[in-house]
Image 1 (cartoon, rainbow, N blue to C red):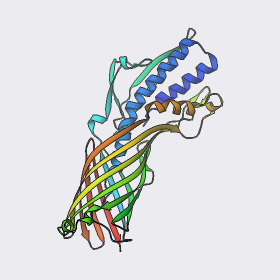
Image 2 (tube, rainbow, N blue to C red):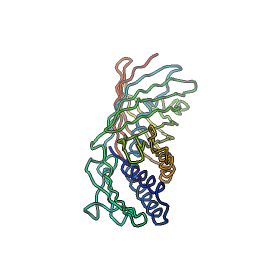
Image 3 (cartoon, rainbow, N blue to C red):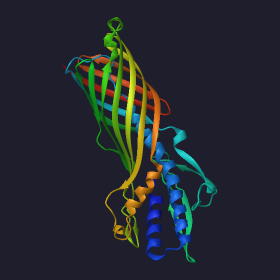
Length: 340
């Protein structure tokens, strides 16, 4: 996945050459337009992947709405499957959307998002430095070219006093096509139906959850050499901090429990480039400049989604599946072991 690599490379190349050899007002204006175009495309390209990361981290926090006994521990292995919707696999651009670039051999194009296919498009532009024209040709970003994203993670919980439960989840960096994904977080659940014995007598349970998670979705870049040295732009990341609030109701029949939930969360999304710095840093702080400009596309997202899950007990083993739905669809499957 090339993500915003092409655009950031152009930024570094243009800034390096211009600042080292010329300072004309016209040239600096062109650099400004290039930056505007780079941010425009980067935003359209990266945001769907960040949205997907939020949905993936939101699912299957609760295994049961019932209170756990004090110090009971449950450990589970989860497999999460995120279904990539067609509407978020591409975005339309026209030449009129750009201040610096034009689409090569076209006036309009459907460019892939990070969740899209790997079709190739090129954008072209020119920098006029006091009559010396320097062409710029860049390959548009490519997507992961898959219909679903699957990753495993571990989840554990422990029963605390007063009907409270501590929950934690963690995944190692899961390799994606030309990138990786990681999530970790913790939350507190409280069973409110414990205050209504007549409700729990019918095997109906109600609980609420507050949780925090951090999602990191990163895409690798190809090292690029220029006459000023390596640019050192090896990866671009979407860093997401999510606060989640959830209300769940479950009904238990012998060894089977059916649970429905309403989930609301708010996420702060940041973008940054990183990796080892290149030789060009001796001339120009490219990573710093790029990261400062990427602050223009930081955003806060709010989501509301529903979830349905079913859990079946086999001794101390539990099998559970959950399906979350809203803007996206996400499935989760887990095997849990309860230590009493």
